[in-house]
Image (cartoon, rainbow, N blue to C red; front, side, top):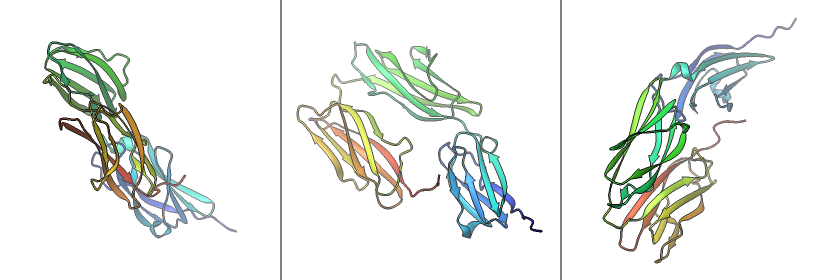
Length: 282
């Protein structure tokens, strides 16, 4: 009589219990015996097949989501053994304010300026906004994760944005100051076409932007050389976009959007992209 013998999973979990930012990488480790195949499933439903050389003892770096369960499945013949752990039980983090910004932090003295304050957070259960002077701003109906609100600025003002969850509260502050009467070049937005800014080697990377007050714009590659440029002494277009090819080598690469006007005032914004081979298999 033939009897299936199950594989054994002795351990499975993170190599560190230090808090991690949601969406960043975390290292997992395992020890098993008798497995013919191992599969790690992430809280997002993606899967990672463990190489045969690492079946008994191994490690892998995967992305940690906001919450959910990592599952290790060990297969031997017609039997499967599983072990899992919850992200929420292992890590406890305060929320992260990924952005809190305005198109410009200047206002013209003697005039009221209407300003869009834009934010994005990760892991926040609630957000709040206060102006000094001015007091609390009503954010009823606004998303804690991604949203915006229009406020009025007519004097030097501090905009204090707070994000809160059960683990704590974090803050970001913007300070509005009087302008000299002339607004310099402003980069309002600068984005990559993938929200996580992660690409395969050689992939096309799409960049887009909105600007004002500039006569020359350059997109600088990781080596500091322009990969795109636009010049117009009467002022370049408010919005634009271009594609560049990702490096063939894995790693992190910084792209810089550089905007200037006719009197030499400049401003920049950067985006860091990650070039990586396929870490998960469907």
